[in-house]
Image (cartoon, rainbow, N blue to C red; front, side, top):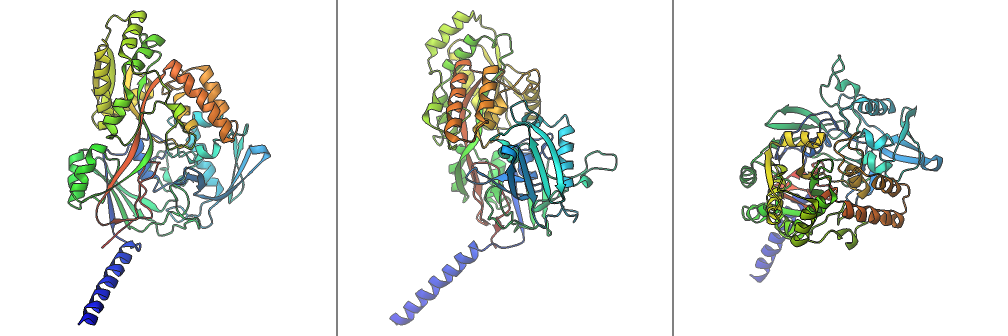
Amino acid sequence: MKTAIGGLALALALGFAAAAAAQDTPRPGGTITVALNADIRSTDPGINRDGNTDTVLQHVVESLVGYRNDLTVGPALAESWAVSDGGRTYDFKIRQGALFHNGKPVTSAEVKWSWDRRWADAAWSCRRIFDGTTGLKVDAVETPDAQTIRFRLAAPNALFLAQLANFQCFASGTISPDSLNPDGSWNTPIGTGPYTLAAWKRGEAVTLQKFAGYKPLSEPGSGYAGARIAYADTIRFQIVPDPSTAEAALAAGQVDLLPSLAPSQIDEVKANGGTVETASGLGWSAILVQTSDPLLSDLRMRLALAHAIDIKQIAQAQTYGLAEANPSGVAKASAFFDDGFLAWPDYDPAKAQALLQEAGYKGQPITIQTNKRYDGMYNNALLVQAMLAAVGIDARLEVLDWATQLDNYTAGKFQLQSFSYSARLDPSLMYGILVGSKADTPTSQWDDPQAAALLAQSVQTDDPVARKAVLHQLHALMAQQVPTLGLYYDVVVDASGPKLRGYHPWAGGKPILWGTWKAE
C-alpha cells in the first residue's frame, strides 16, 4: 500500500511538473490583447507621436539599433557596426535576410530614404537632435553598398548610438517607400518588425498580425535589441480610457495585459487575480515652468515655487512609496545616479513667502494646465495647486483634453503645466529635451547658454567619470535657475492576466509583446 501511495504521489508530482514546464514553453498562436488608455496619434513612426503611438509602432518598425534591458545599445535592424575616422564614421551592416512586410528585401537605399524623408519633414521634432543644435551633427548618410549604411558625423559624439536607439524619434526607423500613396501622402507603415499593421479602428483598437517572413537576429532578445521572436499570431491594442473598466476587463480575461498602472491600482488588481510586476522607471513627472512668461521670468518667483512645493510628499503620495522624489534629469535607474542629484531648494514655505514679497507678487493668478486622461498628471497638479495656495499664490487649474495640452506643450503656450516625459535612457537625452532655444524649439524649457554648453560637454566624451562630473554641474545649475520643477520618476507597474507568459516590464516602460505567448 505504501508503495502504491508513493507511486501515486510521484506520478502526481511528475504530472504537475510537466504541466508547469508546458506553461513555460512558448506556445505559438492566439491573440494577446493589451489595454491602452488612449488611442495612438498616427501610424507614421516618429511623426505626430506620443507614448502609446511609440509602443504600438515599435512592433512594426525597427531602428538600426535598440536599447537592451540594461540600457546599453545593441543590434536591431543592423546586425553589427564599425566605428572609424576617430569616432566620426559609423558603418552599419543590415541584418541578413531582413524583409519588408511586402516581401521585398531591405537594402541600405531604403534606410537612407527613410532617414531623408524624416529629415525633410517639419513635423519631425527630433531633427534638432541631429542637426547640431544639441551638439550632435550628422553631416551625411551614405550607401557604400546594398548592405551597408554609413553615417558621417561632424565630430565624435558619445550619444550618437543612443540617439539612433531613441524610441521616441525612430531616427533610423526603416520603412519601405511603398508606405506612401502614389501622390507621396502617407498610407501605412510597411516596416521590418515581427508584426504588421493589420487594422486601426480609431478610438477602438489597433490590430497587428505576425509577419511570417521575419528573420530574427541570433543575439537573444533584450529590450528593443536582439531577436524579436513573435509567438502570438495577433496583438490587439484595445483602447480602454477608463482605468476601472480596464481593471474589470483584465479580471474577466478580456484583456491579457494592463500596462502603466497607477500604484493605487496594485492591491485591487492583485485581489482580482492579476499578476503585478514593477521595474524602476525612466518616465519623469514634472511641473513645467514657462520662463518666458512675464511673471515667471523672475527667478525669485521660480525659486518661490521650488520652496513652496514639497516634492518628497508628492512622490510618496503618488507612487505609494515605490519611488523617491527626484528633481534632476538623472534617474535612479541610471548608472550615473548618486544622491548629489537630489539636491534642490528645500521645502520652506516661509522662504517662499519672503521671495514672493521680494518679487513684488500681488496675487496674480498662475494657471496650471493638466488633463484627466493621465491620473498622475492631474493629481500632481492638484497637490501643487494646494501647496502654492498655502503660501499665498493664486494657482488655478486649467483642465484640458490631452491632445490640446500636448499641442500647448509643443507651442510653449502655458504658465505651468503638469507633464510627464517619456523614458530617455541616457541622462543627456533627458537634458537634451529640456535645454534649447525657445525661439527655435518652443518645447525647450531651459533656454540658457551655460546649460547648452554643459549639455554639449556631456556628450563629447564616453568616459563615464567625466560625463558624470558634467551632469552634476548641469544639475547644480538647474537648481539655481529652476527652469522646470522635477518631481519623481515613475515606477513601471504592469499587470497581466493568468494566461500571459514570458512578459516582464523594463526600465524603458513600454510593453514589449514579442517573446510573450498565451497559455492554453
